[in-house]
Length: 85
Image (cartoon, rainbow, N blue to C red; front, side):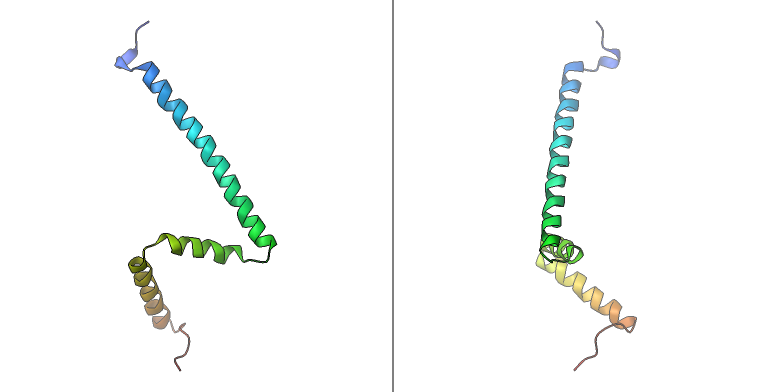
């Protein structure tokens, strides 16, 4: 049996099967994460805010400070910043 284009069928099949297994694992993990958010919501936590906290924790502190500074600048420019004391 010849392989058109010189494709190593066994190697290709192995890659595809590995990717499929990883996709299944990713789906299971995503389902677990969804369950944790649902549990948090059931305990009175705001899931939208919780997601934002998770997103912020992924950033390094310099990146987070830069984003917060820009947000503050934009809010001031739009007249949406809290009044200074």
